[in-house]
Every structure is written in C-alpha cells, then in structure tokens.
Length: 611
Ligand code: G6P
Image 1 (cartoon, protein in one colour):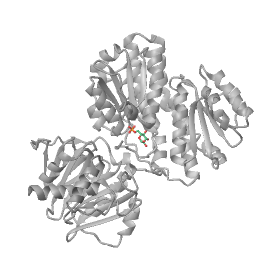
Image 2 (cartoon, rainbow, N blue to C red; image 1 turned 90 degrees about the vertical axis):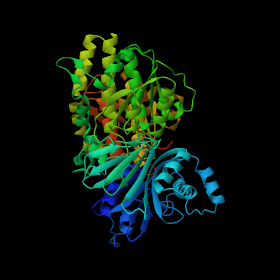
Image 3 (tube, rainbow, N blue to C red; image 1 turned 30 degrees about the vertical axis):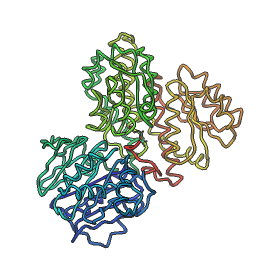
Image 4 (cartoon, protein in one colour; image 1 turned 180 degrees about the vertical axis):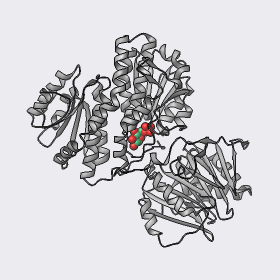
C-alpha cells in the first residue's frame, strides 16, 4: 500500500524519482508527489496516476541531486491533490513521505491542534510531519533525533523518509511494519518500498528492519537500532534483474505473468525435485521436517489469492499427509482467540510477504508458541523473515495487481511440501508419490498447451462482455479454483462474480440463474465429474449460459455447454494449477475488452500493508 522512493547522489533526482514511482505504482495509484531541493524545498503533487503528476510538471526543468517521492493508496482522506504526499512540516522546512498507517493519529492531531498547528489535509502523514517538528522544537534536537523520538510515540506502521532544506545532502528514514530497502550505488543512495525502482542502478541493497533509523549524509550511510546503537549495514546482492520487472513485448504485466507461469513453476521446482532419483529436497524446511511429520494439525493463514491456495493445500495435505488442516483468513484469525500454542504448526502463504493481516496473524501465532513456515515469493520480505523457516516460490517479481503466477508457484511449493511430508509419514504409496512427482514435472508443459488457447478464450470473452454477473462453480480440488476465477473476473473487469462449491448452488445461487447468468463450471475429469454434470444440467434447465473447463476429449459436459475450453489431463490434485489458467485469461480478456486498466484495477493495491 503506497510506494516511497528517495534519492541522493550525483545524478538528477527528478527522472529517478518519476521512473521509480512508475515502478512502484502497483502499490497504489490514487495520487503521486515528489519533493526536491531546488533553491529551497519544492513539493509537487497531484491526484491520479504518476503520469498525471509528470504531465503537470513537465515544463518545470527541475534540478536537484536529492529528492523523495510517493505513490498513494488512500487510507486517511480521499484521493486528492491536497491529501497527496509529500506532506510538509508547519515551518515549511522539511517534507515527509510515508507508507503505513498511524493508528494514534487522532490523539496526536488533537495534541497538535491544541498547540495551534493547522492541518491542510485529512491524512495521518501530515500529523506525522507536524509531530516530528513539534518533537524537535520541544527537545531542541537534531531532525534525526526528532524522527527517532517521534517514532517511539507513534502507534502503527510506517516506512517514512524525510527531506529537509536545512540538510541539503541528507535523507532520514525509519521503518516499523512497512517494507523499506536502501540501495547503495557509487556515491549515491536510494531508498524505496521495494527493490524494483533500485535494480536499474545497483544490485547492492540493505533491507531495513523494524525500529531501525537510516541516516544518509553526503556519501555515507549510518543505521541505528531502536536503542540508538549504531549498526553495521548488512549489504546483500539483489536477486532480481531489470528484465524481470519490465513488460517486454507484452501489453500488460498481467499477461506477461500469465505466460511466465511455466517458467515460474520450473524455477520453483529447480534443485528441489528430481524425478530421476524420485526425491524432493526442500532445504528451507529441512530442519522442521521432523516437526512437520509429527504434526497433529496445520493452520494456514493467508489473504486473497494466497488464501485460495491455502484451501487447495487443505485438500492436498489432508488427502496425502492425513494431517487435519484449518485454513484461516489472516484478518479473522488475528482477532479471534485461536487455539494455537507450542508445538502447533502454522503455514503463512503470501506472494509479497508484506500483507499486514498475514504478518499480524503470524505474530499472534508466534507469540503463542507456534512454529511458522512461510511460503513467500519476495525474498527477504517481512513474512519470510518472521517465519521460523520456509520455502521461496521463486516466481520472479509479480507486478500485475491481480495475482497469477504467484498462485501456481505457491501451489507448486505446497505440492512439494505435502509430498515430502506424506513420504516421510508413510501416508502415501510409492506409486502415488512417483506419479504425482511426474505429473508435477509435467505441469509447465501442460500450461504451455493451455496458453495456446489465448485467442479462443478472447473470442469467448467477446460473447460475454456485456454480462453483469457470473457464477463460478467447482467441486473438490476445483472448488478453490472457482473462487479464484470469480476473484480475478471481479477485480479486473468489475463484473460481479461469485465462486461456490457446485453442490452449494442449490442452497441459494440457483435462484439467480436465468439467460443473463453465465455459469463457469470447472468440470474436469475427476472423482466428482458425474456430480458436476448433474449441476450443469440443473443450470441448463434454468436457461443459464454454460462455460465449461473440461479435460481434453470430454463429451458429456461439452455437449451441454455453450462454450468449452479444453485442458490436458493431469492428476486431479494438480488440476487447479492447470484449470486456473483459462480463468486468468478469461478475466484478462474481459477486462481488456471492457476498457479496464488491467494492471491497475480501481481501488486495489498489490501489497496490502495496512489492515
Ligand atoms: C492483495 C492482492 C492480491 C493478493 C492479496 C494477498 O489483495 O491484490 O492479489 O492475493 O493481496 O497478498 P499476498 O502478497 O499476501 O499474497
């Protein structure tokens, strides 16, 4: 939620800030702004996309070797010019960009109003700017010290950067709960919410931890911990390249990422799965295999698409490992009184590794003594670092706001984990283990076959483009795929869509069915095929339009359906990785045909770092 960027060094900062903000736009795109030192502190901000800010200041010939920038996903205060960041302290001396939520901002604002401060915006960040200034005045201290003292009084999450006209070669930054990375170039530094705006300039980075303060002055980087003790910055080499964060020949990041799935899955399996030796090597969780093998229960916490992966994990782990699984929305788990304690196992699934609710759920479970395994895509993300151990999905950066390759890569990791545990527990036969390993190895090629139906799905989308509602139905392993198909369609094309277990249709949704209701059935060959055929008949009898995802060679569902997409056969436990692909393409095409912004759907953000 919100992206921040800062630069100090020998280059012109303006182009670096604008380019960086465009890279970070997937984190929010309600407004954008920058602050520079160009004969004093200059702030430019605008509601809307980064390109609107860019157009508004195109003729300004901005020159500065230092600057901060922000792209916003609105929390406190509507998207508007005045609520856009940066926010400036009352004296006009310094500006702040912030990602996160200040939970006690009302109390701080009241205190500041009583002292005569005036507020232009409705944001918590303006409160932060004035509060830092107030702390500095009360304590007669440096700005860096004021940031530290102020942050000790702030409740909530923040990654913030401060730029002051009194400190012309200095950036001050602090983090708690929102991600922040420092890029170290040759005589230049970058600060950003993630590495995507930095990778074009340097691959040397320092991931900032909670409660740390960053002070960059001239060509030196100083970092201190919560007790104000100096830290030696832990410099790491970035594992992403520029190519992985660019669209290349694709029109949208989402489409690129849909087509990247075969390779993302191969990368996830690389070095871990060998069909020759019929072995799985999961180094990231090897120290916890014993605990996994003896587990009496596994609790999965996640949000959004990752939660759908959790549901599939439940089917897999219960079937093959014979361990009971509970799948929880992280946002609910954290506010219940979950029965979880020492010896319990929690799996946290997250693409970004920064989702606030998932992090909070993990914190709660950890506090109660549970062991946490993370299944994350972003290396060194907060969730990856908070987990006791885990598996990286290695899908590469996912930029499109709607998650696609993260879903299939997460499933790859989960299948490998489930098979490794089942093998060690002796709850799977050697035949089934080997068969599933073989089928998993075949998944990338199988997806490549499905992707060849790009034009066919486009054609089908054309036929349904004016519909207002959709139902997605599936059973067994394909039920969570129905949820995922509905989520993709609604978030991208703004068509109302619901996913249901097909049998539940009779308990309500069937009342909605008429000729204006397309129903997408995931009707691949599996143990519930006959049942799903019965459900298709029920929809057909009520004149609903039927789209069916079927296994190649299918006859019955094909005859009943208005439109059919065929997928190659695969073991039913792995079918979600295949069946989801036509649904991703359907949502993509529908959004394009309806003129929606595929990579930046309205009101959404890729990484929900606020609750
Ligand atoms: C947001 C994104 C979704 C994602 C969800 C969970 O809602 O738009 O695509 O599935 O967050 O994110 P995570 O990074 O934890 O998987």
